[in-house]
Length: 523
Image (cartoon, rainbow, N blue to C red; front, side, top):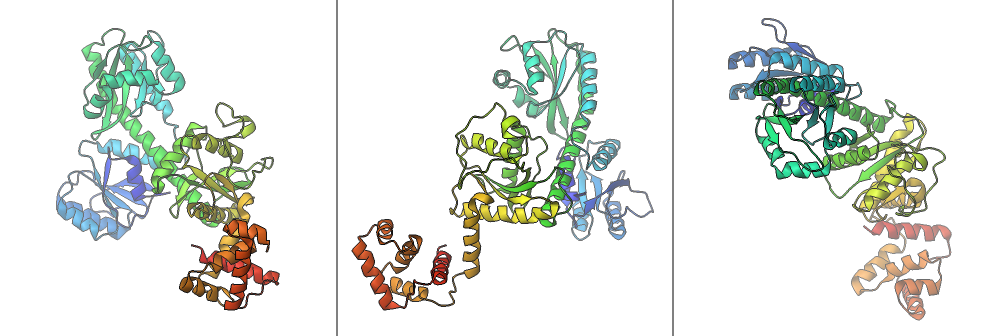
């Protein structure tokens, strides 16, 4: 399921505020506190409806603690002595916004819990019904939009519409030129600050006037009801639309809660699959685990960025989660996918309009991700991805995740160039890195310590010379060119190295051991 802190965050500040996290256990159900009875059970959140006295509130917290309940919800404001008591007890203490009805809370929270594992967005049918109800009240076309101007639902009434409404519905968001007009009129600023209806004058491309009703909960702006107002809407109908906005707010809170809880539950399941291979991910194998990187070190911001990218290119339920401060995705790996060359995948190639189907594969596949990364890196070169080996069963996912993490570390250290890299293309770098880490800097013997001391004391360059000689298979000309010295200078250095310590370069095993030791010294 989902921990109480994540649950409260999913429902949002328009409803709840976490006062004390307690032991932050899982949430399975919600119950009303009954006087004189046990206050909940493990996994339950107890609603303290009607509890206003601080002493009663502390007593409820203590009863919930004795019963092993997950948390207690009390209405704002919570007295300081109640918060202090919560700090020493196991249940979480959650504050409910003062103006929120307990009946609505029960309906909203229980719906979110019951549908924690259901696909998000199924509450959309309710929103379409509300859009139709608003259109009937206003006798005009209506759209319901969130605070980002994304269309959530629209009425079936199509009379008296305009091109802006058609574009909004077809594109599922308000067109840019209309957004610019609304900003110029100060509409969004007024919606964010006030609950009063807003009249918007006609705008570009034949846009008709609009009546906008803000949808708010607990002071938070959740969205708006947009009415195409070819003629002025009578005051009594505006008042009914304002009343309807309260109902819309509850539905938007529920939709956000269901989506947030389902997303977090899915993320927890994916983390478990990446850690120990259970449960299996909701996609058909074979898979690859991909570490997704960007310019920001904040994994939560990277998660938001990559979810926006995957949604934009058609992967609407991405298998993405953060684990150990790294962002991972699980993508499918069709056997027919062509293998790339060593290094990054460049911007060359012909790409279709969406990059989610056709020759570039279905959304969430390796070919699709390759194409998406090529597109987005044109504008944001800091974005990159590295993929572990193929996972043919869920038990292989932890190994693929570990390999992706290794590649991510190599890219972060500059040992691999940024781009899209597969384990298949950089396996040699991974092998060397594993050996380098195993060797460390405490060298067990051999000529390297003596040569290193000589370099430090006399300013010689024996170690770089030996590394270049090994890299060029003992070719004097190639080694000298790599070091930018004359071949005679190189020969002189090699003779001087033999005088400092015994360097036997005739044995293949010795040459391999020397090169690995040299690699271990480079940090």
